[in-house]
Image (cartoon, rainbow, N blue to C red; front, side, top):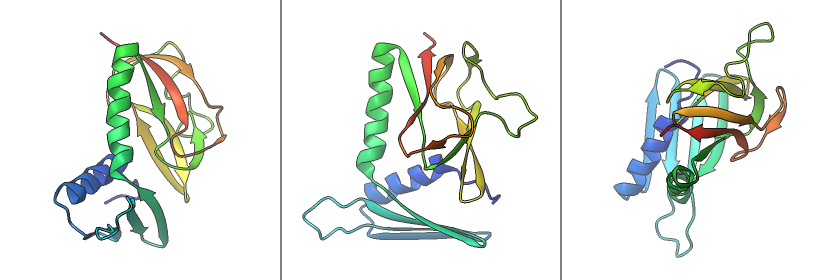
Length: 162
């Protein structure tokens, strides 16, 4: 596995752990390790604790099933409004291009396809490509190049293709 973390795959694993009502799940592939622990006995809803380890680095973040369900609901609502907001899946630094001398991945007015790279978010010295989850036209880029972003912050407004 490369140093690029595929957050969509991690989200699928989290959903599977929740669906199967597993209390703990651990996976290690080529130095990449993910461990998910759920607090099942608690009467209060506690998000799953996700620990991701790559060679020489370790990070922990909380991701809940409610967050993934909310994202699905937002896609449905966006389709009704015909605008979809691409949101930061992590905290980091937003970059519009792969390097300073390259052109941006997208500009306002560009048509984008599903799974097309829109930007990069650098987190813990890893460059994470952020892909479009929808087809449409970039209406607005909501973040300046090189700016820090928060988890869930809106990055792009995309007008959905019909």
